[in-house]
Image (cartoon, rainbow, N blue to C red; front, side):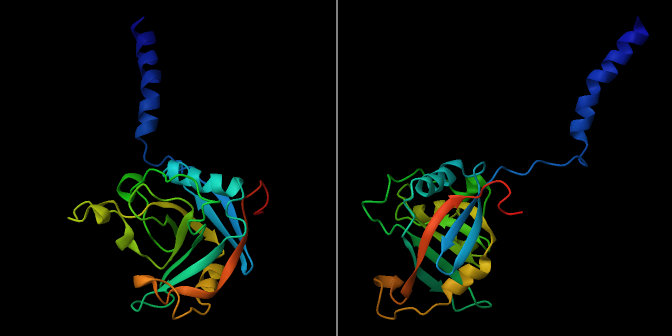
Length: 213
């Protein structure tokens, strides 16, 4: 009887030992692949549906309801430091009342664990919780846009919401970013950042199984 009990205890302990084995593979957070088709080429992004579920779901809804179709990439911010290209590319609905949905709750990078690294997609917004259908793609790391909880500025404390990363087509992002800007277009600190000829987004859709093979 004692021997049988000992064997049973060993079997019960086995799963715990397996969980403690750090050599076991760790599952990657779930993502959803989406293609942004533009007149200058395709951009494939992995939406962070597990780590930033609200923001990723918002982007998917815009895509599935064709709210992005016919919108444009319209802004290219160029930074004067670091190796060029450096900055961000912005596109989307431009607050068009016929396209936008209600603003979504803000998912801070301090909560999601994501960051504004090269190729990150981030929601454009005014105050936190106002993001709708405009988004930016980072060119080089722009981690100053991450949440900074130690900041005294409430807006900076929350930063901007990252919800995905470019996995293919970063060359297209950089090519659009490099197109000429209108020095007179744009308001305030955005003056001179507007593309002279905005690049049309033709379609935004989920990647079908086997499409990337």
